[in-house]
Length: 419
Picture 1: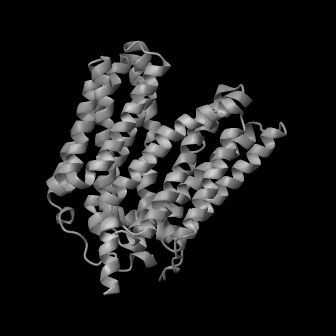
Picture 2: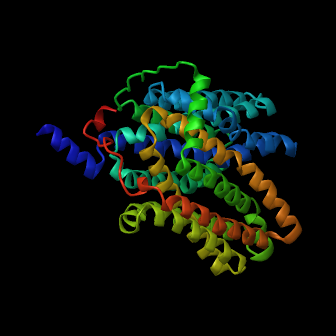
Picture 3: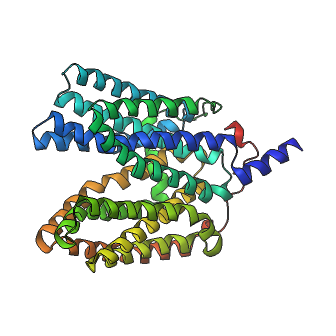
């Protein structure tokens, strides 16, 4: 009776373990949001070379390309909860060193660059471990709901509150956002200590690099996983490319200032929040295939709305883009967590993120060139066409895979609290 009662409680309310993960991830995301705003501001205040400033800002993304695969493989053999705690402590330590250097007047280009790398490495470890641990505490049938709530909370914490706090805190003093960032990571680590530890997973093959290859091979051999991974690469390239030129579009085409630009960005975040809240119900009504394809079509159509070049169509388009991207992300991540065996989950997440993040700088460069030749408006037009065309092969691959309809047996939460 006790076992059944726990299963019912976890299925309806996700359980305490999910609550700790949600709380810790939300607080950690706040730190990422503060860093996103404060690190470039700090770089501008300390450095004078534009190239050095750009290197510091981009340093946080480099670890995904270099460490995504091995860290994902390590997450399949290690205690994932301990990895998340270690990532928070590692980032907090790096920030404390930066605060000390800043207060003593020794924070120069090299320490700032190393700080960006430390924060990026911590993000890789935390994300690989957290995405891999979630299916252990949530039943497969509720992953859309769990991921929807998690992504929504992270969007509010990182993209709205964190970004805003980073700028406001910086006006109070250069070291203030760094100190607050330290506090966010320490709080996240303390929350995660409430989770039970995971046992080390047995492995027949202990060679880490061979396990990395196994993860990449698993994606390549699975048509559905390969399609989702390739699609994520295209989507991220287009999205970051559009974000890179959006400020030019707002100022040159819409003739808006910084306030208008911020409000439009906030509209996109609100669309993401709305998408995260309704994805579970959307999947229940139309299914995963329709939700994934519909999300792509909505993103493509939203880009076409931005091309119209009015404030209203741009605001609606950015809201719809945020909504569609969130629906895609929640369903795609939940599906990957459902169909990938637990002992391969960390390394497939790492490989997935390497592709997804690796295309971002390519997209930024390509769309920057498009904006320079044709103007920022048509960069959104090209992006809309690419996403709409992408929806066709994705729909064809999804149509023939029964795993979108049938939950994986055995991934219930009768032992969810045990991790």
